[in-house]
Image (cartoon, rainbow over all chains, first blue to last red; front, side):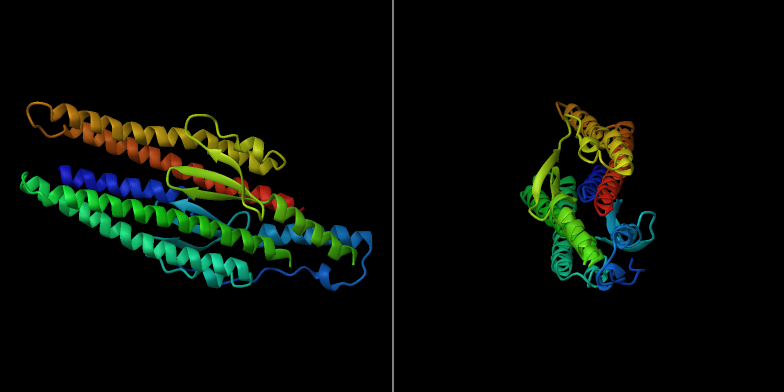
Amino acid sequence: MKSIFFLALLVSASFSGVSAQAQASGHPAPPVATTATSNGPAAPASRVQSAADSARAYSTQALRFESSWGSANIVRGAEGPVVGTVGWFRDFDVAKLVESSPKAVVEARDFQSKNFRGSLVSSIGAATVAIGIVVSANSSNNAASPILIIGGAGAIGWGLQHINSGYAALSKALWWYNRDLAH
Amino acid sequence: MASTIEIEAQERTYDEAALRVDGGLGRLRIVRGISDSVVLTVGIIRPAGVAELVAPSPNAVAQAKLFEANYRQGIWTAALGVAVWGWAFAINHIGVNQPVPLGITFTTLALVTYGAIRLDTATRALSRAIWWYNRDLKK
């Protein structure tokens, strides 16, 4: 019972850690180029038009991520749709989604590598802690159990730190992508 | 030409003022612009002040209020759940070594789950608030 509870706590803690921050089903959609830049000399009316175009492009194309129980949905526009889901061991290609913005691509790759490393190490850590708890429950004098539990907890912490750092990179990637929408 | 100037002005505004969330273990920060200057660190004791930060955008303010209504409560509820179980664990291991009562364990699980749901709602709302704020910079 104790072991099951510890596992449940670990899973809950992981969800909370990831949520502080955001299934591939989408396709990369290049930012909408406004016609304003190619129109040449323009009257004040077209200035208003270009501002409206830019706002419209942002409203329909800009991305954000919304956390959802340990994963993050990448959402396009004001009301959706969800264009992809990232999270533990999800292989959605964020770099491809934001490929129209070079700086966004750099950040997206950073996210992908940190997210994978963090997911891997924290999962190994959770498994190590679970083994430690089981060993501790079965033989109270086993010296290996505290080492396993402490080592596993350290790995979970390192992994969660990497996952969080990855989400900061994802946030930056989407920021750059949205910034370049009106280019 | 004029429209190009208009777009450049919008980009400059976005570069200087657009917000994003920068997270880390145990902290939540909001940074501004291309320089990544930290404009707000969201704590768990005092109200965050996100609504004031995004005040120019009404849609963003609505989402910011939703964030503020859920964030601290979510963290405190989950923390209370863990604390209750820790307290019961300590009490039951002083003297006679007994397992934590099942009722306490389920209470903890319920509190942690409820807290996580509210945290999820809060972080979603924060993401939307920032999205709306940045969107209105491009108007």
